[in-house]
Amino acid sequence: MSELDDPVGASLHGAHAGLARRTGRVATYPADVATFCAVPADPGPDDWADLAALVGPGGLADLFTAPGTPPADWDPVFAMPGRQLVAPAPTGDVDPRVVELGRDDDAAMLDLATRTRPGPFFTRTARLGTFLGVRDGDALVAMAGQRLHPGGWVEISAVCTDERARGRGLAAVLVAAQVARTAADGGRAFLHVVDTNAGARALYARLGFTERRPVVFRGFRVPG
Ligand SMILES: CC(C)(COP(=O)(O)OP(=O)(O)OC[C@H]1O[C@@H](n2cnc3c(N)ncnc32)[C@H](O)[C@@H]1OP(=O)(O)O)[C@@H](O)C(=O)NCCC(=O)NCCS
Image 1 (cartoon, rainbow, N blue to C red):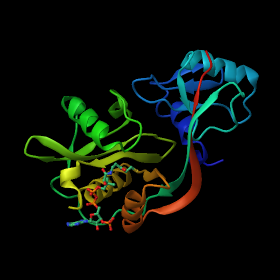
Image 2 (image 1 turned 90 degrees about the horizontal axis):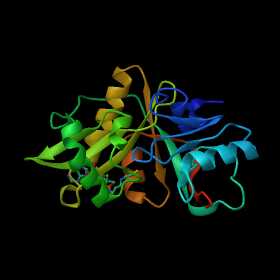
Image 3 (image 1 turned 180 degrees about the vertical axis):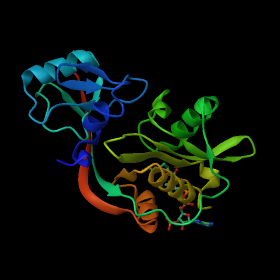
Image 4 (image 1 turned 30 degrees about the vertical axis):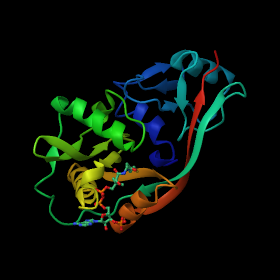
């Protein structure tokens, strides 16, 4: 199986093992980092019980790359069809406006993600990898981050641009910069996008990303 078939599991048991919360054969991230969960390829009742205990009663388990379906008393919260795309080889120089973001930018990153809603983003999500941004004066107006790290792959995530700065090519230069940085580190980039996000899909297609497989973003509420 390719690491890209279950990038959450490959990350939680690999590059992000130091961040992972684990019980038995299941794992998840701290709630202020991500709600993604990993279960084994053949999950049984004990695994789901372990995950329920780990996430906690009423907690959200995001199972978008996990195999299997949880027990019937786990309420489906969302199910959105999407795509997994892989990056082309990097081309061109990184735009000089692109800067690496740090902990001093945590509040600005959270604010930008909260306003633009690129996907799940919590107070410590940026701990998952390198975040790049573009500022206008002091204001962070666009960013693109790294999220899952399955094997040699790096997932680009939290791609977003302030509404007032859209259409200037900022997302394009930031995604291209993440593709270049990943390649320079010896890896290859990929990402996920929901089918309904036509603008983002057009952007990634224009940058040369190609579809690897369909995915379903799916979250379940743990009973209790
Ligand atoms: C999707 C999103 C990140 C795009 O950000 P952006 O900075 O506006 O993206 P870009 O400017 O690089 O490209 C967007 C459009 O601007 C156009 N554009 C690019 N460079 C341009 C330039 N120099 N001048 C004018 N227009 C330009 C592009 O042609 C593109 O148009 P099209 O895709 O409709 O054909 C932004 O709309 C956003 O934050 N959306 C909400 C969060 C989100 O959905 N994120 C993606 C999650 S997968």
